[in-house]
Every structure is written in structure tokens, then in C-alpha cells.
Amino acid sequence: MNPAPAPDRRRISILGATGSIGRNTLDVMSHLGGRDAFEVPAITGMGNIGLLVEQARQTGAGFAVTADPDRYNELKSALAGTGTQAGAGPTALVEAGERDTDLVMAGIVGIAGLAPTLAAIARGADIALANKECLVSAGDLFTAAMAKSGGKLLPVDSEHNAIFQVLEENQRHAVERIILTASGGPFRDHTLDQMAAVTPERAAAHPNWSMGLKISIDSASMFNKALEMIEARHLFGMRPEQIEVIIHPQSIIHSMVGYSDGSVLAQLGVPDMRHAIGYAICHPRRASLPVERLDLAALARLDFIAPDETRFPALALARTAMRRGGLQGAVLNGAKEIALEAFIAGQTGFLDMADIVAATMDRLDDGRAAATIEDVYAADREARAVASSLLRKSA
Ligand code: NDP
Ligand code: MG
Image (cartoon, rainbow, N blue to C red; front, side, top):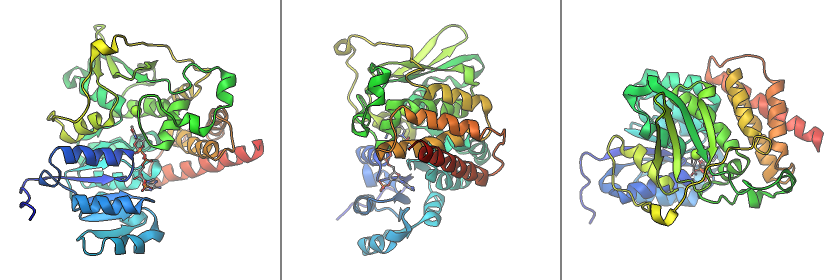
């Protein structure tokens, strides 16, 4: 017989439970006491129904949702007898975000995570945010909603989690710059000619981090770092010129904050997302986490290289998007998604992705800002349409 659950279990819902972030979150929760320590009001996934059902059984989740409306019956019958309610489609996804909880892990990939995460914010939950596209596409709306709700926003992206750890709350006025580290990905030392010929399989093989497919390829093109620059701007209220990127191949320093007295504070650790996830879900407490400890002597050295923006034009595009403001973040992200999907499908080259994004951003640079979430969705749709037509023309 299972022991009776402790009455003060922490409630954590997981959006995108079946993904890389979601699975790592459940792994950390299981290490920190599993069902004795945590209640799981809701979990969501999309295509991986088998895993979603297994996770529902393991956690005793109250509500399990697939984002795919056509798979409701399959999910419902697989959950029969478990006590977990089934849901499917966009409305159920939002309902999952709204379920009463202490914290929501926002681990959906892409702009699909925006509506359920905003729903969770509106209910006053603390948000552990991995889903960077929320901030890139709708940063102003997102931070305004967060300020209104009074909940805590805890960055899960490892760079932003690092900055959050070393950003001294009473010294924010003295922050001069934020230095985001980047591994440089698998093509760090490739020439432009070599990069023009790479395949999606090669691009997906990240040297240090084990992540989902899209983010791995975005790391290789440094579009991931571009998104992270915009993410940092919104999370920490930085001006574009305060955000720097440095290539650090070992991925041991996860990012740094430079202060006006010349001090630079860094957070170090082995590259393992369970660290940032554990920090975010346990904050302000530091828990004992199942991550490998740093062996500095074995490591011996840490390297730093200035990024080459000719080979990695995504970084300059992020700066352009930040300078232009308004809906350019949503446009950059929407166009990047189309270019990325075309690259994965073998329809466009690795280096063409940045050209498509740049041309789409220029075409849709009309100074508009987002008054509502609908404006963000419209900009996303427009960017996808423009990027798709550019792709067709170049085919
Ligand atoms: P994955 O692709 O591994 O997982 C994505 C999750 O979202 C899965 O649960 C997937 O369901 C679900 N999903 C996919 N499409 C949709 C959709 N249209 N609507 C609703 N749910 C959907 O991604 P990651 O876990 O790698 O990344 C998640 C987010 O975290 C991204 O924004 C990424 O940039 C960010 N991040 C990830 C890191 C990592 O280490 N992985 C590091 C830092 C940030 P299913 O699998 O069932 O189809
Ligand atoms: Mg990151």
C-alpha cells in the first residue's frame, strides 16, 4: 500500500511534460521525493501519448492534455481507471495552465506555449520559464502580465538561470552588462563553405547539451543565442547594447553579469539542464540535485572566443530586432521557425535560414507594437507567410 501523501506537497504543473525539459523536470521531482513531495495538477504533451500516459500514472496527475485535438479518444481510453482526467486541443491546453497550482513549468516548444503560460500567469502561479519563444514573441505583454500577477518568474534557460543566480537584487542599478555564453555549436570552427553544406543530422548533434531537435539546430546556427539575447532583454530589463555574447566551448560558465566596478560574477556547473530546472523549482532554497560535480582540475582550462557574426548572422538579427522593438521579436521567431522547418525537411540550406529571417524582418518592419496577444499571433502568422513565400521563390 502507498503511504499517505504528506499534506503540504508542492503543486507543480508541467506544460510540455513529454519533451526534453519536461522529462528532466520529472526526473528532478522524482529525485526530490516524487509523489511524497509533489502534487501534479496538470501535464501536457502533443504527439507522444504513450509517454504522457506513463507520466500521468507515475505522478498521479489530475489532468493530462495532448495539444492534438484528434487524439482525445486515444488519450482518454489509455487513462481509463487512472483517476487522471483527459483533455485535448488548445482550450484544454489553456485549462491545464489554469489549474490551481504553486508553480508551472513552461516547457512547450514554440509560440504554442504562450496561451497556456499566460493563463497560468493570470491565475497567479509562479512560472519556471523554459519556453523562450514566449518572451521573444511577446516580451512586453508577458512581463506586464507577470508584474500584474505578483507571481515569481524563474528562468530555466541555463544562461538566464545563471544570470538570475548572480544578479544581486539590490545592485541592479550597477549592472553594466550581461555576458551570455554560447558553446558555438558543432560548426564553431567550420568555414562558410563547410557550413553551407551541412545536413540537419549534423546540425542536431550538439557537442555539450542534450536537447530537443529544434533547439539543437538553433544552437548550431546560433539562432538559439539570438532568441536568448531577446529573452535576456525582457527578463532583466537590459538595453540591447548591454547584452554581449561570448563563445565558451566547454559550456561550464553558463553566463555572467558585469558590474560598474569592473567585477564579473559567473555561475559555473556541468552542462545538465536538471541544474537550472532544480534551481528554478526549488527557489529560493538550494536543493541537493543529482548532477555531476565540477572537477576543475580535470577540466584544466576554460576558453573564450569572440563570435564571428559573418558565419553566425543570427546574432546581428537579434540586435536589429531589439533595436526596432515592437513586433520584430515575433517576426524573427515566426520566420525562423519556417526557415528551420524548411532546413529540417531538406528544402533550404543551413546558411539560407538567416537570409530568410532577415528579409522577412525587413519586409514587416512597420513599427507596430503588440497591444494584445492577438497582435502577436497575427505578426507570427504574417512572418510565417512571408518567409514561406520567400522560400518558394528561392526554390
Ligand atoms: P522538445 O521538443 O523536447 O519538447 C517540446 C514539448 O512541447 C513536448 O512536450 C511536445 O509534445 C510539446 N509540443 C510540441 N509542439 C507543441 C504544440 N504545437 N503545442 C503544444 N505542445 C507542443 O523541446 P525542449 O524540451 O527541448 O524545449 C522546450 C522549450 O524549452 C523550448 O522553448 C526550448 O527553446 C526551451 N529550452 C530547452 C532546453 C533543453 O535543454 N531542451 C534548454 C533551454 C531552453 P510531444 O513531445 O508529446 O509531441
Ligand atoms: Mg540556453
